Image (cartoon, rainbow over all chains, first blue to last red; front, side):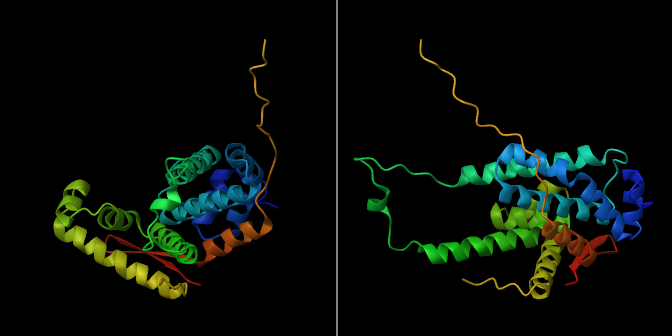
Length: 194
Length: 47
């Protein structure tokens, strides 16, 4: 009862102090407002639910990492996270290739046999999605190194220059990122093979 | 003159995340452990 009437700032303080009930009050307090905000952008209830979940996972991580410093402005902060995730969602959808078949051009005529079939593509997409989720759980500096190395194929020298650290630090971050990823894979019993 | 306006498809609806999603988030929060040591931050999901 006391928690239900507490201000956001007090709830955040209690949550950072280990009171998980404070988080439940915050989620329930803003569930409808944040969900409706997301729904007003994506018009799909399942996607809304996914983005809501991702939003609060980010909120939880940020609070637990002690990086939140906007006391008293909890809702605008969460809305901003949700808004960024909505943008990410549209970016991902636009990245999907779209082909239109015409008389002169037929996509099926140039498709090669070497490409993955639908089932393998589905598995590959699932693995990539699982991996993305795992990488998102790593500390930010480790996420950066993984993204620069694996997705942008940057050398460790370039990574070091770009992040303002020594090559050894960049290598160390990569090493810890891989160790943490392995731990997460084991703990969550995730199978990452096609 | 032709009607150039298209009917608005925008809907304003109040929706809420399901109890299952809320429970997942609470469980995720309980299982997430963050340890800081020697300037490094380690995250564990204690499932």
